[in-house]
Image (cartoon, rainbow, N blue to C red; front, side):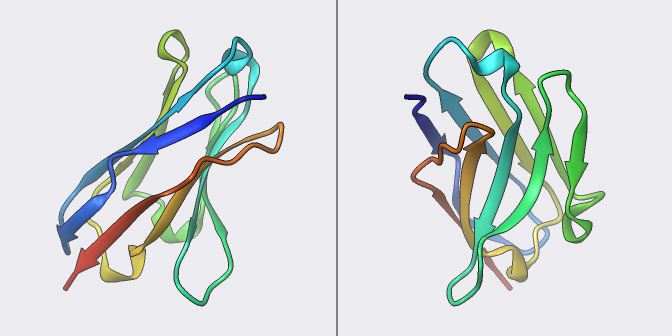
Length: 112
């Protein structure tokens, strides 16, 4: 069972930046596709960005040009650099792997 632990959330003003981290347990990290999702109150969970084992990335339209997903296989870590944050980016952000595991989430709040 892979465990995913997110960190790095917090309160930031609009236009600011945050970097989320997700650490994975186990020895399969390097072959896993990793993703970041988010869920705002009253809304469905939505895909933010993903990165394959070979480093191919994909982004939701609403974060293109502002967010960057990356990974460090030596550290079993995936990151989400979030720049130019907007109040509508406020949500709980979750790490997810292609085996179906989820982290506990980290809250991001962007004030206007």
